[in-house]
Length: 312
Image 1 (cartoon, rainbow, N blue to C red):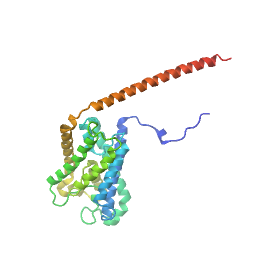
Image 2 (cartoon, helix red, strand yellow):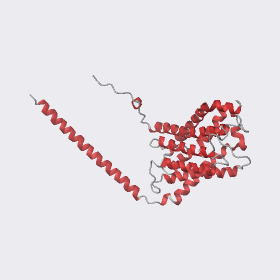
Image 3 (cartoon, rainbow, N blue to C red):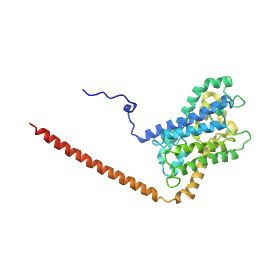
Image 4 (cartoon, helix red, strand yellow):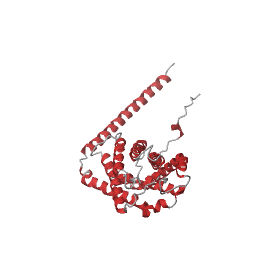
C-alpha cells in the first residue's frame, strides 16, 4: 500500500511560464510596497500627525521597498516601479518586450493596495471627514492615495523636483546593482534601498510629495476618483497629474544614461567574466561527476540483478 504524502502548498502546482511568474511577482511585490505607502499616509493624515509624520512615512516607504524587493528578488527582480523597469531595460537586464507586462502588473498591484488600505481605514476616513470625501481643507483625505503640489508651486519647479528625486532613485539603483562597480552583495541591496528612499523622500518630498513611483501615484489617483473624490484628483493644480509621469521618465533617462556614459561603460569586466567562466567550469565539473555516479549506479544495479537471478 502506497504511503500518502502530506499536504503542502507546493503540491498545488508550479507555474513554469516565466511571463506569468514574473507578472505575479510584480503584482505581489508592488502591492507590498504600495500598502506601506498608503497605510502610513493614512495614519499621518487621519491622526493629524500624531501617529506618523513625513519622517515616519519616509521610513515606512523605505521598509516597504526593502520587503518588496526581498519578496520578488529572485522571481521578477521586484522592479515595483515602471522607471526601475525602464532602467533594467536600458542596461540590458530586462527584455524590452517584457516591459509592458511589468508595468501593467505593477499598476495592478498598487491599485489593489489602495483598495485594501481604503477597506481597512474606511471607517476612520468617514469619521474624519464626516462621510464626504474632500480634496481641500483640514479634513481632506485624498492625499492619502496620491500627491498634490504645494500651493503656488509652478509646474517647472515641481517637474525638476520630481525629475531629481526619481533620477536619484533609478541612477543610484543602477550603480548598486552594477556588478562591475560597487559589487554590492545581492542580499544587502534591498537593505541599502531603505536608506536611499528615505534620503530622497526627506530631501525632495516637501514641495510635491515625491511621487517618484508612477504606479503608486497614478493608481492611487485613479482609485481616489473611483472612491468618490471626483475628477478634481486629476484637474487640481491646473491638471498637475501629468507632471509626475513625465518628470519621472525624463529623470530616469537622464540619470541612468549619465551614470552609464560617465562610469558604467568604462569599468573593467575581467573579474565578472572570470567568475562566469569559473561558474561554467564548476557546473561542467558537477555534470561530469553526476554522470559518472549515475553510470556507476547503473553498473552496480546491473551487477546486483545478475547476482539475484543466479541465486539458488
